[in-house]
Length: 227
Image 1 (cartoon, rainbow, N blue to C red):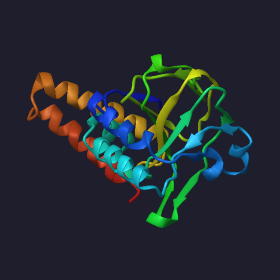
Image 2 (cartoon, rainbow, N blue to C red):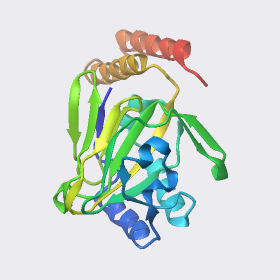
Image 3 (cartoon, one colour):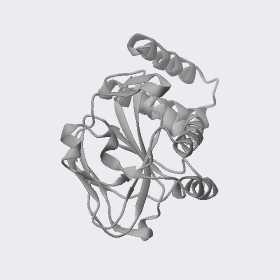
Image 4 (cartoon, rainbow, N blue to C red):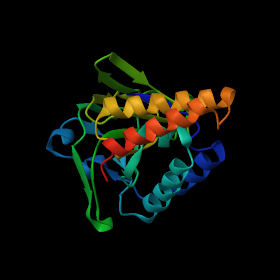
């Protein structure tokens, strides 16, 4: 399942976050690459152990917990501390699939990457090219979202960042280990949750059908969740 999550950060929050990270020290993006990614990746990255990355990442994780759409779709067990990259003119990232496991030893974080997320921190008008291109069973999807919006997609998907031809693309990227490992089950629970919410708005939260469906949702979650 691929999902656009709008408004994870407000324009004011994006501006504050950019003011924090733009003046920090950036390094070659291959500092955190595996052997395969290093062959395809040209960008700059904020060192993950820097104060700027930690503070900005904490602000993003706080915003994510307050976003009902993100929480419902991802059912997060653990969110990997957000990382930050920037693509200037000529920078890009060729076709690749994210590593199945991610480690951050200094924070003792180890996760299985069920979902990948990109949170855009530049407006589309600020750069040319730089589209995130995700390939899945339904075809090829080009993504270029407003600053503050997020795209969520299975980490098993092949994807790339098209070369930037003008301007600069700044984003945060991270991974989520979900309580529900299987993408199809996670999508089913998401659809069910949305249907319950929509029905509750017309039938009322205490309607017998809502009580029954909510119970079924939680029983499925109880059956499938991995803690």
